[in-house]
Image (tube, helix red, strand yellow):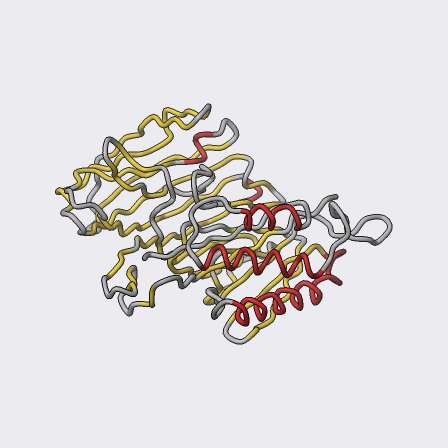
Length: 349
């Protein structure tokens, strides 16, 4: 099997400094740049093929006009094999808010429930903020008995697994993932599942054959979570950066080599560019790295220099806040194990 190798970063620092105020940061010019904040309590039931979540969103109006309603896109509904159902919407005092599904179209994709509009209790002033709570349920082929794939790539990928806020623009709403956000996510799932995520683990608690992970990520454009019962997780700390690899048991011998390569690539980046803009990195491989001949099952021979170059290339691209597809990105895609890098770059500047 050709392996899919992916990477999940969190906490990017690009052209700005951290602020002591949650959901914001200070740009180089001294202005405060707002970020949304998501607090999500998620219960994943692989055996039932579904997730149930309670989400509290603090939304920042980034425009100079008032807003009467808030729109969120519901990406799973754009697929015939997935669904995302809104169960209830409330304000920060617990009072119900009026809401309704909205049709959404992108290219050949279309759904009558592709978005949801929430009527705010009062107009949201320019650069003001409001808080709404949503209960939701999702089902489909992204959560199955032996794999959980809650992907949330940046840009116009339409693969967010939760209701995701949109930015009002002239004549409608922007589809771009142009709203860097902070995420505070608690996920409960069966104890045998190993997890790789955009968020770093703050703590973990066992609960009746379940595990409950508290994850956090700052100023990212999306939050991805993968889980698989047959992974083994190996961790290493490199300076202030927490590294981890999640591999199938038959590929466990690759763990140290991958961690070594990641550490070398980070050292290269910091020597040639700047301090590495992340403090958390998960690398995972859903497939197998070995074939019947015990050789890497790749599109070519695996070379450490390629692995290092991919990481450094992605890091350079993300650290500079690039929002367009670049040769760097395409090169990283081509030379890895035939799969994709999942990088969540963001800067609020």
